[in-house]
Length: 151
Image 1 (cartoon, rainbow, N blue to C red):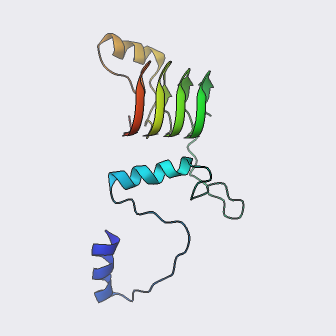
Image 2: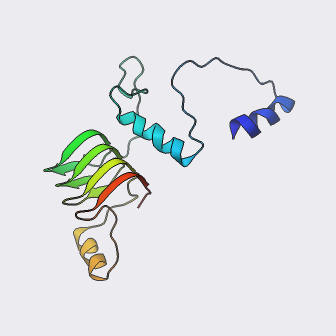
Image 3: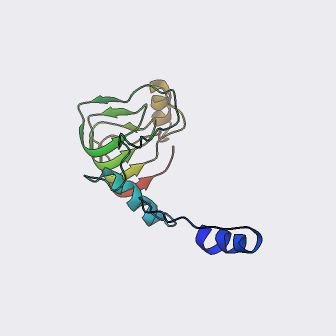
């Protein structure tokens, strides 16, 4: 932790100087504060603005296709690249790369981290026939107030 470990030790061996930072900052040292800081990005207006023309924010290229949505209801959300959203409801949530939400699923106040890779329709069918769970949110699943980890 910078405040309790790195900076105090650096004071002894290095020329440490301060800068008065007056812009947006959130300490995300706990799971709760990490969740709250991410959910704040969905607020209107957000405390931190990705789309300020004076200070644009660029992400690294992922070379993914755009998100595909079919008959979805989306309100106050950030949807990342390469997602499959089918007949779902998303409210005040962040949806990470390659996420899959199936028919009837609902996310509210949730942060879905996404997936490292895609599963084909054949792979999904095989996993389900074996009683295993494919990556993504299954049909008619309701999730609120949580973080959904990668994969």
